[in-house]
Structures are given as structure tokens and as C-alpha cells.
Amino acid sequence: MSNNNMTISERLTRVAERANTLCNTVSSQISFINSALSEAEAQSSEFINNARAEQSHILLSSNQQMHLQDANTIKGFNTIGLESLEVTREATLHASNIVDHTGNGVGEDFKANVFNGYVNGYFDIVRLKWKRNMASHPARINDDWYRNYQQGALTTGCYFKLIAGSIGGEMSAYHNFANGWQLLGARQSASSISKAFTAPHSKLTLSRNTGEEGEALMCLFGTVSGFVNLEDKIWGLYPEFTKV
Image 1 (cartoon, rainbow, N blue to C red):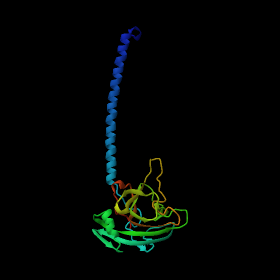
Image 2: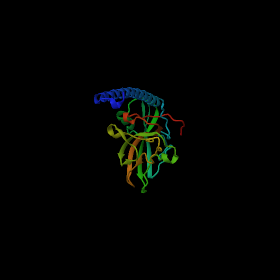
Image 3: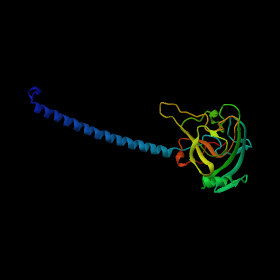
Image 4: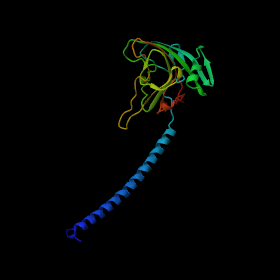
């Protein structure tokens, strides 16, 4: 029947039929799209979970155990911007044991307020006493940037207790423990596949002001591959490929 010979009622009926057919087609496509989205979400979740499970955090920086080289140097560390630096080994933690090298009770303080479990390995807690020089350039406790390898998805962390003075840099407190102890950390990655990785020059700086003096306790400073879940207070002694 020609559309020209249809009554208005017949034309409206034909339009309604076509609309119903279109709605049914759209509904079937929506169902197909939802099914495809659910499948893609499941695959994405599986990929993310597997990637997280397979990711190993490997230590990229030197001497996370923070062993001393001499009274002014932490082995493997390269400081910059300091007029003076005095380093004292306060305590060594290993297994369930504490060796107190100074009688100041720093190891007991750490175990009472930060971590009281079994230490798989051993590390030192060191006391830093410093004076920043008069240059405007930030004073870094570990000038990793000069090695030119700290780019990519990385996490830097340490346990830190500021006694006097001030600190700065990219690291911030992810958790505040009792008696002044903090878990400091900084994470970096590319924010999209079209952007380059960034590597902050100053992860932890000593003294915000030139000529300022300071004092702190610190342990387990290091940079590892990938993102570490610092929000859940996860930080420890990480495996490494080479020893210093």
C-alpha cells in the first residue's frame, strides 16, 4: 500500500511498528554492549591482579641496611649541600634481637612504637646530626639523582624520627607512629602512556633553611621498583641484585 493512500491512523500505526522494531534492536545491542563490557572488566581485573601478584619490589638504591662507612658517611650514600654530617649507629635489629650500640635505647623505642615483629635480615638505625651549608641548593641526604637511574615506577621510603630542625623534599608522612616516628615515602610513575616518567631531584632534604642544624633517627632508607602500598604501612627490607 502506498504511504500516500494511508490514513493518518494507519501511518501512525506504521510509525509505531517501526519504533518498536528500532527499540528492540537497540535493546539487543545494549545487551550485547553490556556483555562485552562485563567481559572486558573481568579481563582487566584479572590482568591487574596478576600484574600485582607478579610484581617484585627490587631494591634499586644502595645500602638499605644503612651500614656506616665512617663517622661521617653512610656506605653507598652521596650527600650534597651539607656543611657537616655526623652519623652514629644507634642500634642493629636482626630476627627478634636488638643490639644497642650506644645505650640510648633507640632499638627498643623503634620496636615499641613502629614494628615489634621478626626481622628477616638485619639493618641499622642511625642518628644523623647535620648542618646545612649556605647555598640555596637543597641539601640531600641521598643524592640518587646523580646516578641517573631512578626513573620509572618507583617507591622511596624510610622510617624517620625528627628530633630537631626540619626536613623537606618529595617524601611525605604516610603514617605517624607513636613517639615521633613516621613512615616517609614518595612514589612516582608516568600519569599516562603519552607522558614521560618523572624523577624528583630531592626526595628527602635536610633543613628547609640555609645554615640550619638538625638531628634525626632513620632506618631502611631505599628506593625500590614499582608501587609499594605505603597506605597500609607496608615497608621493610627489600631484596637487591648487588651488594655494596
